[in-house]
Amino acid sequence: MLKQAGIIAVAALGALPVAGPVSAAPTTKSFTFTCAFPNVGDRQVKVEYDTDFPASVPAGEPMPGSTLTARVPVSDSLAAELRQNQDLNLEDTEALRNLTITDSQGRRPLRYTDAPHPLVLADLLGSGTRTASYTAVTNGPTFTKPGDVTIETGPLVLSMLSGHWIPLPPDGLPGLITDWAPCNPDPGQDLTLGKVQVTPAPPKKLDFGVKGTTSLRGSEPIALSGSLKSEYDASTGEVSGDLSLDPVTGHFSIAGFIPATADLAFSPAGRTTGTFNGKTAGLSSPMNIGLTSITAFGIPVGGGTDCRTTAPVQFNATGSASDDYSAEVSGDYELPAFENCGPLTFLVNAFLPGSGNPLKLSLTR
Image (cartoon, rainbow, N blue to C red; front, top):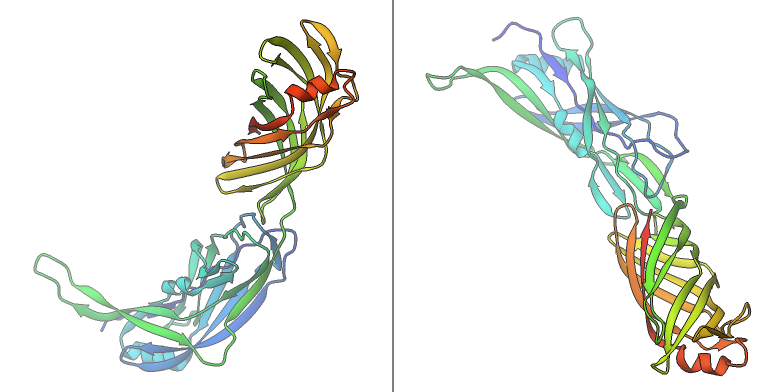
């Protein structure tokens, strides 16, 4: 039997990191476990947890890690039994794996990272502390949807380095046996360590520069430019904002041979809405289109400040999005009839309105 102090060291679980404006006071909870110690039998062990889980966190934001400490007081009787079994130390770093979180995505382990100098060892033979403790720092998850999150403890394992030597091959060195003591929570306990409310994320401001092209019936491609100032809800993927397009000039061919030019002006008829979900994007924007000037063979033939579509054009476009929410979207739209364009309004409506007008937009941040 080796003459050295037996040590018991207990590893505990990681905690949910604090994030958002609402924090909770640190709390301490204790649970009892029944552990099956080799050559000793079933013994009850108490585990105390110090936690500082936040009261609430916003959806869609990664949470920084926070700490959780677990302590295991070792009774004199248990220490004596472990000494009789020649156990040199006991450590429960495996217990880190028993912390779980349950949210809208289901139940899963809460990941962790060792804290600096995480172990405090319980001295089984000497006059030192008889309480082992372990501290870890969690890798905070991101909760995508509002709701309640529950953090629980569960079964854990204690590992023990025994004083029993085992022989190894002639070219090796003797080693020590590692024993394992599985521990199950005693029945009738609420194993909840904490609850966190995931609140709707505050809208994130997303401002885009807009470039693109469109074509009207009989026109050459028309270059578009402008901006979109919007707010994004990370918990739902929804975006809402104001699309502004700069005035442009379009070149047309009336009846297939009459060259015409029109100055187009765009005015929003409502909010632009859409979604950014993963790698996809979709936008819908109602827009009034005006013809401030129309010329044929260089001669003004209509248009004006009141010349515009009789109803808003509905721009609908879908496509791909990148991690910074920049997007490439496309679609087509129907151009309604125009009104108040002068004596030749009928001629404007004879060649411009119609469906299938293509639209491509690039949104960059």
